[in-house]
Amino acid sequence: MSKKEKISILVPFLFIIYMVLLVWIILFKLQFSISELDTVRSINLIPFHYDNEIGVRFHLTEVLENVAIFAPFGIYLCMFKHEPRFSIKLMLVLGTSLVLEVLQYILAIGRSDITDVLTNTCGGILGIIIYHIFEKLFRSKKRANKVITAIASIATVLVAGGLAVLLIAN
Image 1 (cartoon, helix red, strand yellow):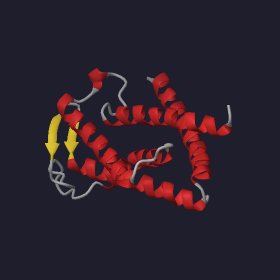
Image 2: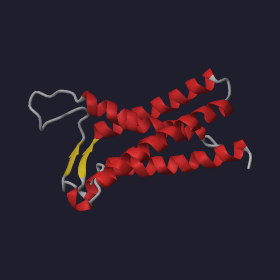
Image 3: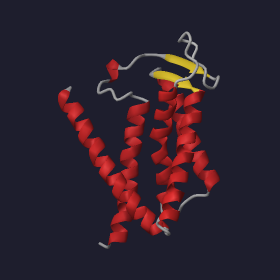
Image 4: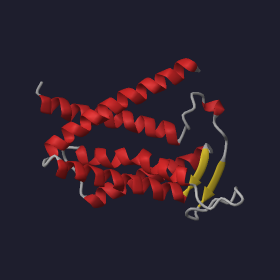
């Protein structure tokens, strides 16, 4: 099997692992037991509105976390062999975020928030921008994919190792 074939198989595999982790983080809040999840069903359709906390106008940490968690989504969309147009990538990121927020509401396992949809989408767009910066930096899609695949592989191993430690500790 050539290096090109290995990378073309590795990218979808890493993407699947990323998607499983994304669902686990967003829907299940990194919980190992469904019974430990909060049974909250609320919806906020006012962007960047936090009515539960007096004096809190903006949650920078939450915004940055949402952007960071969705940036790989945008990067992966650019790495696939048949890369979709920007408008399709944008709809995929927005749609995935929206589906996850709706599922939180339907399953009563979190607060559905338009702010999350907006910041997740910004994260996906940031990932697309990062990918194109790598593509320009390495002067080809092929080289950019190799570097990003190596980085993603290392990150996946580190995250999986960290989660294994959490599982053992619990």
